[in-house]
Image (tube, rainbow, N blue to C red):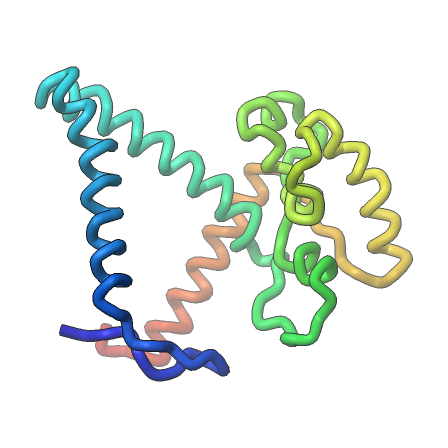
Length: 176
């Protein structure tokens, strides 16, 4: 079986110890026992399959969509220099979306203000727009791109980005 060892970029990877493997698999067992076992016990197989799992899948897809727009659009930066300032890296690798929408603010708990959320994770969501008003001009002053879009434009950006990455992959590995 494959093991994790060697190197990833500049980081030397250590082989997994017995206790690492034990806690990994024990954690999986506890996780799936709680997320599937408890609903199965209380609601039966039909409740699990027809109610619990669909809500988990829809919620997971929604959350993944939120994160994709915030981090994987055409306007977010990748492969930045390792010595870049932490705050600048947070701004360059994130994108805000729907900053003027009360609905999105409520639906995602402020995660649409992704830049401000990364810089100040403990600020309550109803104050993130105040930080935006301070951070955006500061970025302009220092020549740091401050990215903001709508959820729909961000989703189109993500899909375009995925299409580009897929095309690059198929060009490099035509046998896939």
